[in-house]
Amino acid sequence: MARIPSSLSLEDLDQILPQIVDQGLPDGGEFVVANLNEGERTAALVAVLVWHGFLPMSGGRRKVGLLLGKLHINRCVLEPQKTHLGKKVRKRAKAFRLTVNKAWPEVVRKIQELTYTSAPGDCWLTDQVVKAYQGVEKLGPRWRRNIRFLSVELWHAETKELVAGEIGYTCGSVYSSCTGFTSKDQYPGAGTVQLAALGAWLAKQGFQLWDLGMEIDYKLELGGRMVPRAEWAQPRCPRVRGEWCVKSRETKGVVVSNYISSC
Image (cartoon, rainbow, N blue to C red; front, side, top):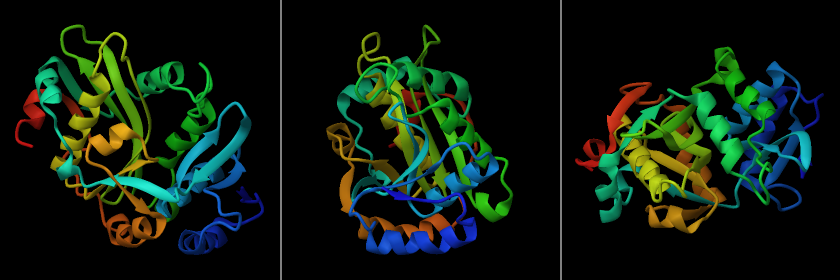
């Protein structure tokens, strides 16, 4: 991994990262690494990484106190209006309600409880990186640019239980999914409904591109396609530089079947 030293100014890093995006990392890998506990600098570093197409995440239990920036060699992307809505999703949708940015703490807690790499508790969405994400909101325009972190929530309409959700971020008219959870044992298929509903929401809000990250079968089934780093970087630039064409910054609660009926 290429390390970003604490002594490197954000201005210099802002000039270096485009070269890495174009040429790749010296070791041929996908990660840069920095210290995670540097207060406002860490939040600004998160924003700079996002601006240049990196996914900011923590090192989890194995790399405690480290901020990782992942630049996928190949990335799964989807134009939101092309989200595949299967018959099962449409049938199940009436049982759920979608909200955006209404339950950040609950979504974080559920992800930390239910989502892990190799064993329970091995979740990279640590309290430290969550604090850095939230710190982006407090940055001045020089580093925040047009970046915002969001929580997405899917609720069971009858029980009012939070059954699926994710943390992601917007950069211009690009939305990137970071990580999420689903209560798949109690509510089978809820994760698929959440993703389908999110795709419909992104399309209605005017987002041009949905960054789904690494390749996983369910993302391809949703309509995602894999693109190499160069293809991700080039057409993404004007979308990132533009403003978020948002009609509503928050969604208070929409029955999913009504939301996707026109898609």
